[in-house]
Image (cartoon, rainbow, N blue to C red):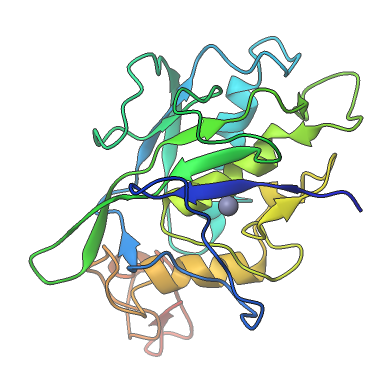
Length: 249
Ligand SMILES: [Zn+2]
Protein backbone atom coordinates (compact mmCIF):
# COMPACT_ATOMS: atom_id res chain seq x y z
CA UNK A 1 0.00 0.00 0.00
CA UNK A 2 1.38 3.29 -0.99
CA UNK A 3 1.40 5.67 1.91
CA UNK A 4 2.36 9.27 2.23
CA UNK A 5 3.45 10.91 5.42
CA UNK A 6 0.78 13.20 6.79
CA UNK A 7 2.87 15.79 8.46
CA UNK A 8 5.83 16.90 10.38
CA UNK A 9 5.93 18.89 13.57
CA UNK A 10 8.41 21.53 12.66
CA UNK A 11 10.37 22.83 15.61
CA UNK A 12 11.99 26.22 15.79
CA UNK A 13 15.44 24.82 15.24
CA UNK A 14 14.52 23.64 11.78
CA UNK A 15 12.62 20.96 9.93
CA UNK A 16 12.80 18.19 12.50
CA UNK A 17 10.69 15.08 12.25
CA UNK A 18 9.04 13.98 15.46
CA UNK A 19 10.41 10.49 15.84
CA UNK A 20 8.12 7.86 17.27
CA UNK A 21 9.89 4.70 18.38
CA UNK A 22 8.58 1.31 17.39
CA UNK A 23 8.02 0.25 20.98
CA UNK A 24 5.23 2.73 21.58
CA UNK A 25 1.76 1.37 21.27
CA UNK A 26 -0.51 4.27 22.08
CA UNK A 27 -1.01 7.99 21.80
CA UNK A 28 1.95 10.28 22.35
CA UNK A 29 1.81 13.78 23.75
CA UNK A 30 4.06 16.50 22.44
CA UNK A 31 7.06 17.06 24.69
CA UNK A 32 7.06 19.04 26.85
CA UNK A 33 3.47 18.22 27.66
CA UNK A 34 1.45 21.32 26.82
CA UNK A 35 -2.09 22.60 26.49
CA UNK A 36 -3.97 25.71 25.47
CA UNK A 37 -5.36 27.95 28.21
CA UNK A 38 -8.44 28.53 26.05
CA UNK A 39 -9.44 26.51 22.97
CA UNK A 40 -7.71 27.95 19.87
CA UNK A 41 -9.88 29.60 17.22
CA UNK A 42 -8.28 28.62 13.90
CA UNK A 43 -8.42 31.07 11.02
CA UNK A 44 -8.92 28.88 7.95
CA UNK A 45 -7.69 30.43 4.71
CA UNK A 46 -10.75 31.77 2.88
CA UNK A 47 -8.97 31.35 -0.45
CA UNK A 48 -9.26 27.59 -0.17
CA UNK A 49 -7.07 25.01 -1.82
CA UNK A 50 -6.73 25.17 -5.60
CA UNK A 51 -6.50 21.38 -5.87
CA UNK A 52 -9.92 20.92 -4.28
CA UNK A 53 -12.64 21.45 -6.87
CA UNK A 54 -15.42 22.20 -4.35
CA UNK A 55 -16.64 25.76 -4.95
CA UNK A 56 -14.83 27.21 -1.94
CA UNK A 57 -11.72 25.09 -2.28
CA UNK A 58 -12.66 23.02 0.73
CA UNK A 59 -12.80 25.87 3.27
CA UNK A 60 -16.15 25.02 4.77
CA UNK A 61 -15.67 21.27 4.70
CA UNK A 62 -12.37 21.67 6.54
CA UNK A 63 -13.95 23.94 9.15
CA UNK A 64 -16.76 21.44 9.62
CA UNK A 65 -14.30 18.54 9.92
CA UNK A 66 -11.93 20.06 12.44
CA UNK A 67 -14.72 21.33 14.68
CA UNK A 68 -16.87 18.19 14.33
CA UNK A 69 -17.96 16.06 17.25
CA UNK A 70 -16.51 13.17 15.24
CA UNK A 71 -13.13 14.77 15.86
CA UNK A 72 -11.52 16.52 18.84
CA UNK A 73 -14.61 18.32 20.09
CA UNK A 74 -16.29 14.97 20.62
CA UNK A 75 -13.38 13.39 22.45
CA UNK A 76 -14.96 13.81 25.88
CA UNK A 77 -13.35 17.04 27.02
CA UNK A 78 -15.78 19.59 25.63
CA UNK A 79 -14.87 22.11 22.94
CA UNK A 80 -11.17 21.79 22.17
CA UNK A 81 -11.01 24.12 19.18
CA UNK A 82 -13.12 26.41 17.06
CA UNK A 83 -12.50 27.69 13.53
CA UNK A 84 -13.72 30.28 11.07
CA UNK A 85 -12.92 31.32 7.49
CA UNK A 86 -10.69 34.34 7.15
CA UNK A 87 -7.61 35.73 5.53
CA UNK A 88 -4.27 34.22 6.44
CA UNK A 89 -2.41 36.73 4.29
CA UNK A 90 -0.71 37.89 7.47
CA UNK A 91 0.49 34.36 8.20
CA UNK A 92 3.11 34.77 10.90
CA UNK A 93 4.54 32.02 13.05
CA UNK A 94 4.34 32.52 16.79
CA UNK A 95 2.01 35.53 16.76
CA UNK A 96 -0.60 33.79 18.89
CA UNK A 97 -3.12 33.59 16.05
CA UNK A 98 -3.56 29.96 15.00
CA UNK A 99 -3.91 29.82 11.22
CA UNK A 100 -4.59 27.03 8.76
CA UNK A 101 -2.91 27.86 5.47
CA UNK A 102 -3.69 25.99 2.24
CA UNK A 103 -0.28 26.94 0.92
CA UNK A 104 3.14 26.67 2.49
CA UNK A 105 4.84 30.06 2.71
CA UNK A 106 7.46 28.54 5.01
CA UNK A 107 8.44 25.87 2.43
CA UNK A 108 8.38 23.43 5.33
CA UNK A 109 6.34 20.66 3.76
CA UNK A 110 7.80 19.12 0.60
CA UNK A 111 7.97 15.77 -1.15
CA UNK A 112 5.69 13.21 0.50
CA UNK A 113 4.71 15.63 3.25
CA UNK A 114 1.01 16.49 3.01
CA UNK A 115 0.73 19.16 5.72
CA UNK A 116 2.65 20.32 8.75
CA UNK A 117 1.97 22.00 12.07
CA UNK A 118 4.41 24.38 13.70
CA UNK A 119 4.40 23.15 17.26
CA UNK A 120 7.40 25.08 18.53
CA UNK A 121 5.56 27.96 20.18
CA UNK A 122 4.88 27.49 23.86
CA UNK A 123 5.78 29.01 27.21
CA UNK A 124 5.80 28.12 30.87
CA UNK A 125 2.99 29.05 33.23
CA UNK A 126 3.65 30.31 36.73
CA UNK A 127 2.84 26.85 38.08
CA UNK A 128 5.51 25.23 35.92
CA UNK A 129 3.16 23.65 33.38
CA UNK A 130 3.43 24.56 29.73
CA UNK A 131 0.91 26.42 27.61
CA UNK A 132 0.65 26.40 23.82
CA UNK A 133 0.92 29.93 22.42
CA UNK A 134 0.48 29.23 18.70
CA UNK A 135 0.30 26.28 16.29
CA UNK A 136 -0.01 27.28 12.64
CA UNK A 137 -0.65 24.74 9.90
CA UNK A 138 0.68 24.72 6.32
CA UNK A 139 -0.29 22.53 3.37
CA UNK A 140 1.72 21.04 0.51
CA UNK A 141 -0.36 22.37 -2.38
CA UNK A 142 1.53 20.22 -4.90
CA UNK A 143 -0.14 17.06 -3.58
CA UNK A 144 -3.39 15.87 -5.22
CA UNK A 145 -6.21 16.93 -2.87
CA UNK A 146 -9.89 16.14 -2.66
CA UNK A 147 -12.74 16.87 -0.26
CA UNK A 148 -15.83 14.84 0.53
CA UNK A 149 -17.90 17.58 -1.13
CA UNK A 150 -16.49 16.95 -4.60
CA UNK A 151 -18.99 15.37 -6.98
CA UNK A 152 -16.41 13.35 -8.90
CA UNK A 153 -15.24 11.35 -5.90
CA UNK A 154 -11.70 10.42 -5.01
CA UNK A 155 -9.03 8.99 -7.28
CA UNK A 156 -5.45 8.87 -6.07
CA UNK A 157 -6.04 11.99 -3.98
CA UNK A 158 -5.80 12.83 -0.29
CA UNK A 159 -8.79 13.97 1.74
CA UNK A 160 -8.16 17.44 3.09
CA UNK A 161 -10.58 16.88 5.98
CA UNK A 162 -8.81 13.92 7.52
CA UNK A 163 -5.38 15.45 7.09
CA UNK A 164 -6.46 18.67 8.80
CA UNK A 165 -8.08 16.86 11.71
CA UNK A 166 -4.69 15.15 12.14
CA UNK A 167 -2.86 18.48 12.00
CA UNK A 168 -5.18 20.13 14.52
CA UNK A 169 -4.44 17.16 16.77
CA UNK A 170 -0.85 18.37 16.79
CA UNK A 171 -2.21 21.87 17.29
CA UNK A 172 -3.83 20.95 20.60
CA UNK A 173 -0.84 19.01 21.93
CA UNK A 174 -0.73 15.51 20.44
CA UNK A 175 2.20 13.80 18.75
CA UNK A 176 2.11 10.72 16.54
CA UNK A 177 0.58 7.43 17.63
CA UNK A 178 1.59 4.11 16.12
CA UNK A 179 -1.91 2.71 16.54
CA UNK A 180 -2.95 1.88 12.97
CA UNK A 181 -6.19 3.59 12.03
CA UNK A 182 -5.88 6.32 14.64
CA UNK A 183 -6.16 9.93 13.54
CA UNK A 184 -2.67 10.63 14.88
CA UNK A 185 -1.03 7.80 12.93
CA UNK A 186 1.78 9.51 10.98
CA UNK A 187 0.72 8.52 7.48
CA UNK A 188 -2.40 8.03 5.42
CA UNK A 189 -3.17 6.39 2.09
CA UNK A 190 -4.93 8.06 -0.82
CA UNK A 191 -8.72 8.24 -0.62
CA UNK A 192 -8.74 7.35 3.07
CA UNK A 193 -10.65 9.91 5.10
CA UNK A 194 -10.51 7.77 8.25
CA UNK A 195 -8.39 10.33 10.14
CA UNK A 196 -11.37 12.73 10.06
CA UNK A 197 -12.92 10.54 12.76
CA UNK A 198 -10.99 10.15 15.99
CA UNK A 199 -10.49 6.71 17.52
CA UNK A 200 -10.31 5.60 21.15
CA UNK A 201 -6.54 6.05 21.18
CA UNK A 202 -6.85 9.66 19.99
CA UNK A 203 -9.57 10.40 22.50
CA UNK A 204 -7.50 8.94 25.34
CA UNK A 205 -4.73 11.36 24.39
CA UNK A 206 -7.02 14.38 24.48
CA UNK A 207 -8.52 13.26 27.77
CA UNK A 208 -5.02 12.88 29.19
CA UNK A 209 -4.26 16.48 28.19
CA UNK A 210 -7.56 18.19 28.89
CA UNK A 211 -9.63 15.80 30.95
CA UNK A 212 -8.07 16.95 34.18
CA UNK A 213 -6.84 13.49 35.15
CA UNK A 214 -3.21 13.90 34.23
CA UNK A 215 -2.39 17.32 35.59
CA UNK A 216 -0.90 20.07 33.53
CA UNK A 217 -4.08 20.65 31.58
CA UNK A 218 -5.66 24.03 31.24
CA UNK A 219 -8.79 22.90 33.05
CA UNK A 220 -9.31 24.00 36.64
CA UNK A 221 -12.62 22.15 37.04
CA UNK A 222 -13.10 18.68 38.54
CA UNK A 223 -11.01 15.84 37.01
CA UNK A 224 -12.22 12.45 35.81
CA UNK A 225 -13.50 10.32 38.67
CA UNK A 226 -14.31 13.21 41.01
CA UNK A 227 -17.76 13.36 42.59
CA UNK A 228 -20.03 15.92 40.99
CA UNK A 229 -23.61 17.07 40.83
CA UNK A 230 -23.68 18.76 37.42
CA UNK A 231 -21.76 18.44 34.17
CA UNK A 232 -20.60 22.04 34.33
CA UNK A 233 -18.40 21.15 37.30
CA UNK A 234 -16.31 18.70 35.25
CA UNK A 235 -13.42 19.27 32.84
CA UNK A 236 -15.11 16.74 30.56
CA UNK A 237 -18.46 18.53 30.87
CA UNK A 238 -19.92 15.08 31.64
CA UNK A 239 -21.21 14.25 35.12
CA UNK A 240 -22.97 10.87 35.10
CA UNK A 241 -24.11 8.13 37.49
CA UNK A 242 -26.84 7.47 40.02
CA UNK A 243 -28.04 10.41 42.14
CA UNK A 244 -25.62 10.90 44.99
CA UNK A 245 -22.93 8.83 43.25
CA UNK A 246 -22.31 10.90 40.17
CA UNK A 247 -18.73 11.35 38.93
CA UNK A 248 -16.97 13.25 36.18
CA UNK A 249 -16.23 11.13 33.12
ZN1 LIG B 1 1.57 14.45 12.06
